[in-house]
Length: 146
Picture 1 (cartoon, rainbow, N blue to C red):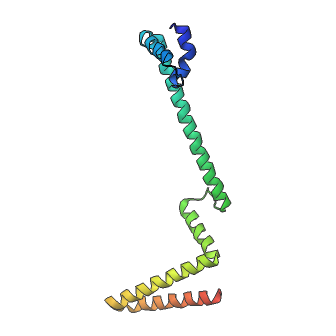
Picture 2: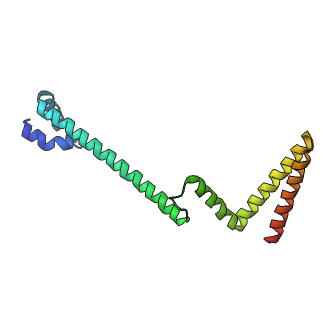
Picture 3: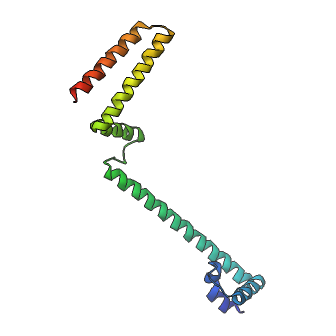
């Protein structure tokens, strides 16, 4: 095989798209002997590798675009820092009746556990008063919102 013929098939060979064993064997034999064609093969392999990396980068960009679209759909501002987005998410849960109920029940359970621990390990009067005020506020909120 000569250089001109080899160069015509070089891109296909670098991409491993040539299926005929005879052509592959001829290409390999020529590339082993010819320094210029070996260098061209290396360049094609580098170009194809960069094309693959660019394709993967585009796919990641599409993934980022899908996440931004989902955030926009959920009315989350992607420009906000993560902590603020978390607070915003909690406020959206609080606006939902089911979410509000879950948060309130969780807070009551935490308060009950806190009071149980206080009573088991010793009564701390200020902490007990604080817990009772908190329970009262939660019960008031729950009654008011029904």
